[in-house]
Length: 232
Image (cartoon, rainbow, N blue to C red; front, top):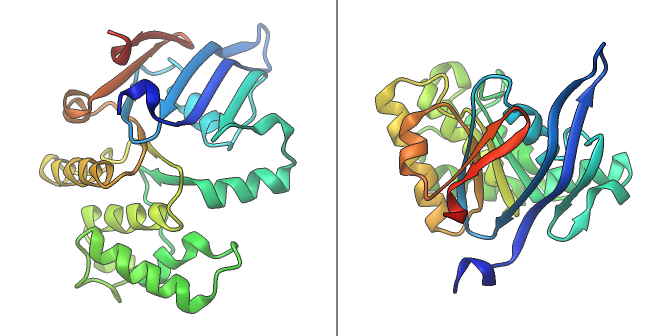
């Protein structure tokens, strides 16, 4: 199947984002972007290029000033705050630089929170969390608390949590930013493996190892797409 034949998971059409000021700050200036099912895409650019703003808009964490964002064909501008929250919980997985694990919870409990508000039974959430922790190589760390885990292990827990419920797309913000080079390579390898297993992944990153190993790269400059390697 060619890329053009794959289903569109995420689409941005003429997306702009401005913040109040004198003059206003135009973080995004008219972004058009397609992410298709099964893609592994790096989103890069210098500080101030709009990467983080774009990730927030893509993940329905922030609304664009103009333009439209579609997740699996659904226009997010037509959704209420409650519907947006539900969509984020069901169809979007998030991975952050800071891990955002709950200190008093074990690895399996942290992963289980990924479906906490989706009406899924505790037993089913627990079973899914166990399977995902084994999948990311933490089968021997199920009951460990975050402070008992290394940085790389904490990020693996966060990745397992993002995979709960089989989201349509995973958005990662500098997932190797707090890790040493060896651990970063392990996380990059894991992202590749998850992608090979079918996950659609977009990563905002400064990590050259990611940009060099990913099959697709979109470069932002001053709130615009300066280059899309997939169009080459």
